[in-house]
Length: 89
Image (cartoon, rainbow, N blue to C red):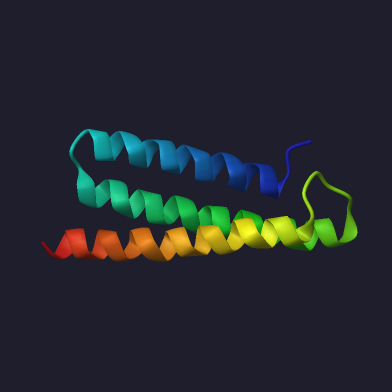
């Protein structure tokens, strides 16, 4: 069964792959904004996963999802700042 977490995971992966293609084709600003959006979606996925694993058994513990989420939030901030800097150039 496909749930909200699955949809968010696929969306995050798709947006990040699109971002890499945009970066490789020379569209730096677009690629960086897409990476920031992909990491934001990954942050949402992580938040839902933390809530889900508190009540259901899963492959990863809620602590592992918390670590993944903090990495995703850091990626969102990092690529967002790079994108804003690239846009101002």
